[in-house]
Length: 185
Ligand SMILES: Cc1cc2nc3c(=O)[nH]c(=O)nc-3n(C[C@H](O)[C@H](O)[C@H](O)COP(=O)(O)O)c2cc1C
Image (cartoon, rainbow, N blue to C red; front, side, top):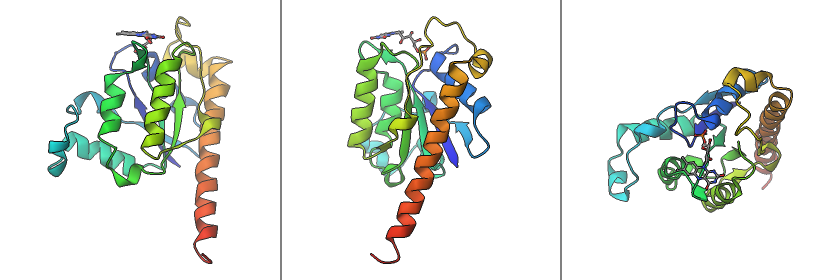
């Protein structure tokens, strides 16, 4: 299963980006996780640009289309989502391959519940399938863990691995349901 990780933080020392990189380290063999590194290069969303997509947006679309599921990790800014993650999602609103895409939402700060709720609302509106079993909160702020530390931490490591396995199961289940629905219906 191909999973595309997207961080909503551009900060070099971002906990959310480190969590996604740690997830690559702990991913089970069934999961090939890559991170879309181009969120900071995306232009601000403008519907006028949709007729002739900028190359950075084409790269985002290609990465999303090639993935079976998405893994999002994004901080809360002023009780909302970051402009970075919202801008990235806005470029996916009219993008057909995003519809019904299984998505897991990682929250690196349980106190950031406003952004978590807003992100879920946006994803639901965009017809993503939020995989609840794979969407987890992990208290990483103040834990001072590097990406390597996260991938070895006795709380973080199993939680992230379970999340990826739950995402994998959801994707496989979705494929089975599609397969069983098509021949007779
Ligand atoms: C401009 C700004 C606004 C923030 N607003 C909130 C907030 O409303 N709630 C919160 O829990 N944390 C808030 N924070 C703290 C961030 O969630 C925290 O710095 C987090 O580490 C950022 O994620 P990152 O490490 O992935 O960059 C804010 C941080 C910044 C820079």
